[in-house]
Every structure is written in C-alpha cells, then in structure tokens.
Amino acid sequence: MARPARVSPDAILAAAALEFAARGFAGARVDRIARRARVNKAMLYYHFNSKERLYRTLLRQIFTRAAERLRAIGAGSGTSAEKVDRAIAGMADFIQEHSFFPAIMLREVAEGGAHLDRGTLKALAGVPRAIAAIVQAGVAAGDFRRVHPLFAYFSMLAPIVFYLAGTPIRKEISHLRLMDMRSLSPGEFVRQAQESARRSLARDARHTGG
Amino acid sequence: MARPARVSPDAILAAAALEFAARGFAGARVDRIARRARVNKAMLYYHFNSKERLYRTLLRQIFTRAAERLRAIGAGSGTSAEKVDRAIAGMADFIQEHSFFPAIMLREVAEGGAHLDRGTLKALAGVPRAIAAIVQAGVAAGDFRRVHPLFAYFSMLAPIVFYLAGTPIRKEISHLRLMDMRSLSPGEFVRQAQESARRSLARDARHTGG
DNA sequence: GTCTATACTTCGATAGAC
DNA sequence: GTCTATCGAAGTATAGAC
Image 1 (cartoon, each protein chain N blue to C red):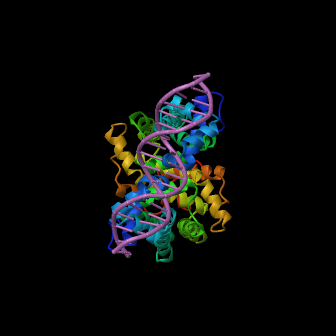
Image 2: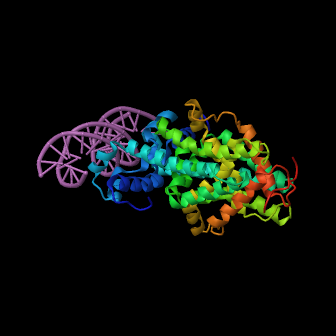
C-alpha cells in the first residue's frame, strides 16, 4: 500500500492514504489523489462517490487491519507480559508497513471523528478494545497490578504513535539546530516503551524480566 | 483565552484557537474566526495580514507559554521525581486552561510543521527541551535510571495530550455504545500517569513513593 | 480603526461523449 | 469503465469609503 497497486480502487486508496496523512481531510486535494494514483478524477468519483466516502473507506480499512493484528496477539500464546511487548512492537511494525497511519490517527483524534460514520468509528474503537482486552486478562490473572485498561491503552500506544508521526517535524527541528532529536532510533524507542510498560504494569515494585 | 477578550487582536486569537483546534489550518475558515471574535473580516486582516500569520502567532504564543510553565517547574525546588509529577500535572492543568491546545499539538505533529517558520518551531521545541532538562538532571543526580530524555518526553506527555485531545471522540464512541470510555476521569488519568512515570524512571525495581 | 462590496482563485463534483 | 471540459460553490484576500 506504500506504492500504488495495479487495480484502480487500490491505487486510489494508496494515493489517498498519503494525501490524507500529509494534509488532513480538509487539506487533501482530490486532484492530487487522482494524479498520484494515475487515474482520472472522474474515475475516482466513479469508484468512491465523494471525498468523504473515500476517506471513510480508507479509515475503516486501516483501523480494521490494525485492530485485527492486535486481536491476534491477544488471542495468541504467551503470558500477558509477552503480549504487551508484542502489542507495542506489533504496532510499531504496523506503522512501518503503513507509514501514513500515525498521522491519520492523530488527525482523527484531533478532529473528534467529524467525518466518520458509525462503521468507521467502530473499526477505530477496535484498537483500544484489543489493547484493553490484553491488559484486563493480565490483571484478572494477577500478572499485572490494577490499572485502568484505557489508561494502559493510552500509555502504551500514544508515545509510539506520537513519536513515529512526528518523524518529519523532529527532522526539521534537528535540521534547524533547535534541538538534537536524531539520537533516538525507532528500534530503541520500541525497546524503551516495552521496558516502561513492563515496569508500569508490574504487580509489585520488583518488575519482571530485564 | 477560552472566551473572547476585550481588545480585537486578543479576541481574534481566542476565536482562532477554537477554530484551528477544531478544524485544522486547512479546514479553518477566516469568516468563522472573524464572526466568533465579533470583528469584521477586514479587521482581522488588518491585524494579522494572512491566515497563516494568524496561525503562527497563535502557535508561537501557546507553545511559548507551555514551555515557560515547564521550565519554571524544572527551575523550581524539589526532587527530580517531584518535578516529573508536577510536569505531568502542570501540563494537564495547562490543557484545562487552554482546551484547544492538545488538538493543535496533535495536528501540528501530523502536519510536520508545514505552516511554521523558524521562530514558531523554536517555541514548539521548547516543550521537549524543558522535559528533557528535568529528566537529564534526575539521571545525572542518580535519581533516575538511564533513560533517553526524548523517550521520557514522549512517554510522559503523549498519553495525556492524546487522552485530553480525544475527549470528543471518546464521548462519541461511548454514546454509540461501541465501547465504554467514560469511566476514566482526567484526574484519575493524571494520577495514573504520575505513578507510571515514577515506576518507569525509578533507578531500581523498587519504585519510590506510591 | 472599521466597514461593505467584491475581485480572484481553488476545489469538489458532474455532464456527456466514447 | 474511461476521458475532457466545465459548472457552481466556497474561500482568501483586498479595494476603497468613512
């Protein structure tokens, strides 16, 4: 999905992902999406009817995929602590495969879901649901201390989404020598996020693993 | 700043804050800002020259204020751990006083700073700088374990910004009965964020306070 | 400093031929 | 399914009177 695919609708969705991520719903231009997908603008409307429908289709698809990956981790084997590690790494991997994802997520949170219908919101809600399920299972099993599952969702995913969405602006800030932000790699970020989650969720002060 | 002030430029900035937060730079309408500020649109251009300049003025002001508050905490009295607690609570307070702030921050990260000049980016960079300074002092004093100060910035502030910016969409998701997200109050969120930061930064497994 | 009226541009969307 | 040409709405910005 990073590069335009063969078939028209897929190529359009791929181009739309880049455009909506970079400029938001209001800032996105249908002409640019069509040009980037190498289709005619009338073709785009033939397939998606309106800019809004294109946007919803894209969001429903991407949030569904993200939630599915997290649900698979939750339903898989291993301890709750291992699942938390995998959820953090899995989200980072997902973002690396779909680099437009974090910007769209940030924008949609800021937007308050203004352009979304019920089905799209349901797909979006699947992400916190999947994380909450993993954390709740760990609390119920006595592996984790009592934390609010929604707080766990925010503390696990917000930093990685924020960090990866912010790559362009960090680069710009570093380039202008306003602050050096280059010394923290994505891999190291994931490792520290896992360590931090482990400590935050540990049942007693002595955290598990290292 | 939540409600229009007496003087024109301040009233315009207050109205612009709400409009830009709710709709982003591209989605914001100059007409709406002028109407909400109860000034004529020509008056707005008389004071700010363009939509972009208005946006930059607003952002420089708000990021400067946020960074100043965090710097004051860092320069104040108390242990590093206390300063981390205060930084988290201070940011939550700041957001409650300037409710438009988190949405604008999320949008600008997603946007990659596209509409910002050097001065505005410098003001924006002041926020991670202030947090990094607090964390680095704690590491140097041996109060904290060795964490990357930039990671500490993201793990401390991203959750609270994300959570508070997401209030409207959480309300919508709860209203549509897609997931119950109402059971986590801002006060409780701050408390858990402080506890989580304490555990994450603790030098040994046994965390301080509790 | 303040207002009305409007110029100029861009953009989402469609008509209609093939 | 695919294209060209274009409409009509909406938006930023300014001219020019007071």
